[in-house]
Length: 198
Ligand code: IMP
Ligand code: MG
Image 1 (cartoon, rainbow, N blue to C red):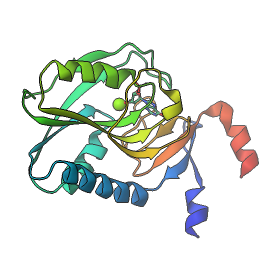
Image 2: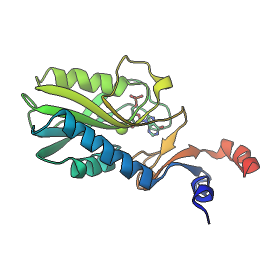
Image 3: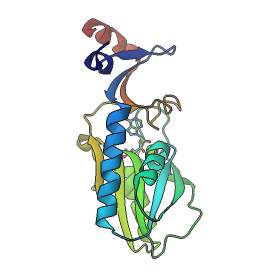
Image 4: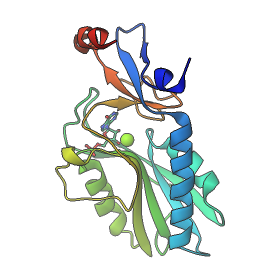
């Protein structure tokens, strides 16, 4: 089977949903290597402190951390946005704080996806109060057209269209995080249309 064919393949799951590959694992890994080098170039010789937003950012952070040369430490924070489905409500709550103080550190917030920007806006406010030396943001995915809050990321893996995506840490009702690629999710209602395209 050719690569092109494989990329456009839909994987149907037992929940009646299907996932269509948007970004292959290889493309993601290549991009992460590029981002890691860019980050190190921007802060040569400086210890970097990565702060991952649980749970979506775990794979992005773990791959990114291993690709950045030199001194790197990391920590995790968790937030909940009061919504379990494909739409977040916009209200953000801190559910797990960092282990260590970030004062005086060069901090890079690592997020899976920038959507409305409300989560990141909240986190940046929290982190700024803690007086880091510098505060930067790295996101694997950016859905620019969905933005509500005026925030931007310094390092963006891929700009993607407005579709609900899963995989590489991103979930739908806690499922699909373990996919080694990013794909667009179609729920039951979208199934017919997708079949017609196949
Ligand atoms: P924001 O606050 O709207 O920017 O949303 C940020 C969070 O919503 C992300 O960290 C994800 O957890 C979740 N999210 C937004 N879009 C998607 C998506 O397409 N798939 C899975 N989770 C998403
Ligand atoms: Mg997240």
